[in-house]
Length: 306
Length: 302
Image (cartoon, rainbow over all chains, first blue to last red; front, top):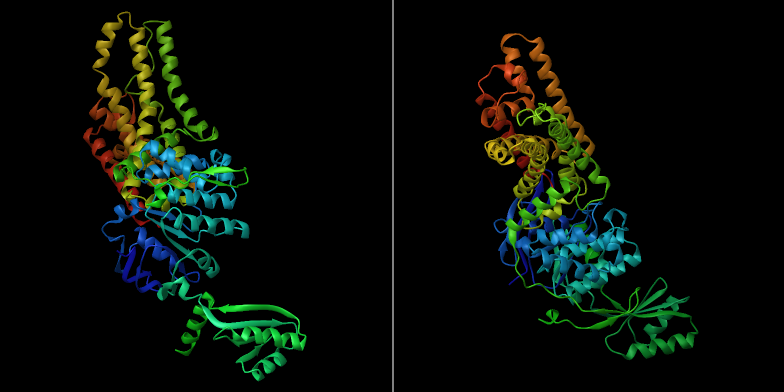
């Protein structure tokens, strides 16, 4: 059973803005990264899956339930963390999360119990009894996450969960997202415009651009080793490249780097010996991998060509 | 499933070593849409009186509630001390006389119930649960109506209590007052439902609380002033229908029609219209206002 399935899903705002343009995709459970630039249609897709927005045309199912007709049933099993602020300032985190738990259908006692539990999981302790208005951005994001998981959803939709956080807050939030996806076992969709974040926590990648599907594949297929060794030296990259070619390797200089093809392990020793003989200052030696950025770079080129 | 098992793992944290019981799932019942509706209704009713909120949000609702009850209590006390004296208040005129307090309560608390959810974008969370948009609108309207009903009912109960206690024959007085129950329950209901609908219709259209409060006060003030001026200055037909602009005149007329007697020298008694006219107009205004609230929440972006 696909977790999420859409078929030529289109959403237009007015007559000029097309947020989703015939999007067709199938997603299996996991931690799914939904990546795209601002305005690519990430939030629109999440809102349609929740039934907050009606698509202009096309259809979508979540856990085999139709978004158009079974919205309330779907929403019982979905947790949502919106991109923007969504917390009332004058109530405490405990009260708010428990209220949202009951809105999601938990009986009062269960709502109280689970509220205490999820607030502990997201790392809110003494401050949970204070009004939310006085919280830092990081604490607010935690409350938003807590209200999204208080009813133990089967699917979690997170829209820019690290929005507005400092680097430390980002790391903590990403760890939390990773835990909810793995340890808590909740299928999670993380929308983000930051590839690095998606790369860190997700197992599967959906890339959309201008409302169209760009890529849909496991993360591992993007970050495989390329079989290229990057050698960074202080000076003399060109000379090094020449010597390596003379030694029978395929090597090109690229700025301070020399890129060496590595079909097997033989080049490592040669590179080491040549650098030693030339007395060069070696700064870095690394196995090159595909980066997610390449995905967009390549796509950008084909766009230009078209 | 492995996540249902509670794995006890000591974990270092800022607060020292804590024992993390692990995440536990939830396999219990999920109560669905009706429970969500009931939850929102009760939470909003509590919010209308500032319960569970800071002391500051209690000042207005409790202050107005006190002002609403004090005249009835004072009149009752005087009645008890000087038996036989006539109270200026009865079930017919009390809510009419204290209409500014009801209007202020609507103006202050209707925005409290709906504007802040819009301003703080809490709506997108509500709408991402089992609740339908119309459920949200109706739960909020219901809570406002219930709050107004309680506010209006309380002083009438004080009048009831005072007249029973002031009577030399308490048992007999209880019997006499039983006949007034439709009026004691009915009048607050007749005032509460249309006022809540009007207040919600205005408040739901702006996320700014101050604007909403101002608009509601303006509607009551302007309609009362215009209605009064036209009925004084106008002639013939105009002066006859002019009072109908004022919602409180409509409410008093409806009350007069359904559960009580006319108030001497009030706009309703002067208007010389058949009473069902007030009832029909009240119903129409109420339905239109509820329709406006539902329309607003069907369209609002979340």
